[in-house]
Image (tube, rainbow, N blue to C red; front, side, top):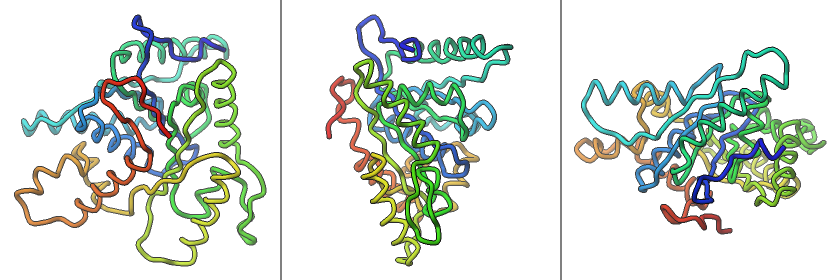
Length: 287
């Protein structure tokens, strides 16, 4: 349905949409979303954010912690314009979907003057999640660096370490991508982010990397380095901060290798994702 797509504003344009999507929990979607949001804000972009995970609401809680940090410390940190969209309790599928679509369209309309909108989706299949995916200019799927977790991308024979076929989630992405193409929209730029990378060159790590290279060609995504397993990411959640926010504090303190490494990981992630290119510009997609 064309009504599932975000409408353009009165100037005939709309923000660039980045969606964090994965039907497996615990992969760092909200942490990745928050660091991406803050990185883009600090680069000078007008950023909006939408949380479609009405059960967990991790991104919303992260931003609530950030607001409390500002109130308690008086220190200003950049904030996106945020909306949380909850699932409808209406009876009947059509009525519920229409209500959810209306809520999401209203949130997007309120953010239509932003350069970029970042959307965090739930770790399960739902109508709201599909609405987010079909509107994704770029889809980022964080996965933990293990065979157990990359089965969100494909059915894997773990003994032979071979691909049996696409997963339900990959099929979902294909379906939404095809819907975009049918209505003349550019295809989704799908990026799989390898999170919780270890620094040990173990066999399992090499095997996962080789399998992801195969899947990238077969399924149609790009692979990017994500975040290592760092305690700092969990600690900063309680303050609503990111490793980019503590950079100024680190300047007056002894060097913190974990913070510095985290910032390098964010920079590497942005570089591989390859966007956006010009603040306020409309031609932001380049291969």
